[in-house]
Length: 120
Image 1 (cartoon, rainbow, N blue to C red):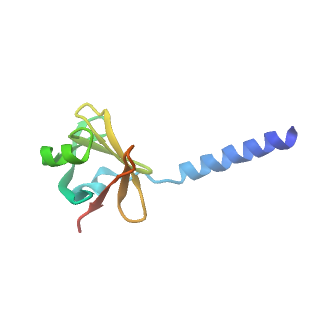
Image 2 (image 1 turned 90 degrees about the horizontal axis):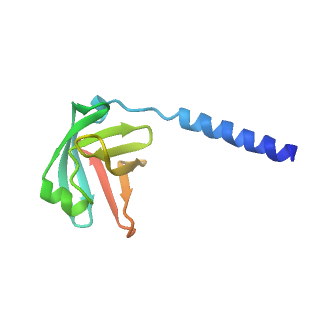
């Protein structure tokens, strides 16, 4: 039993260390023009560093194009240590893109993916 408790504690401690080592990017680091892609469709999305509410920033993009790729049309965004959340105006989450080696990825319930890449 002692070994089990020690193993659980070590696991919790190492997990906490890993989570705390992720850096929260600033809005200015991520702001700019991005490409959102899904299948053959792509939309240009602009992440601004203009605040909407709290830690949520303004997002611009073609509403019809965004609606075709996502469940709802986001108007805001916020950085997280492990990705980018696209939001509604009051900060409610629409979708979450997880950070990958190159860009950010969203996996939909049907298994299809959406990717976001910042344009240079």
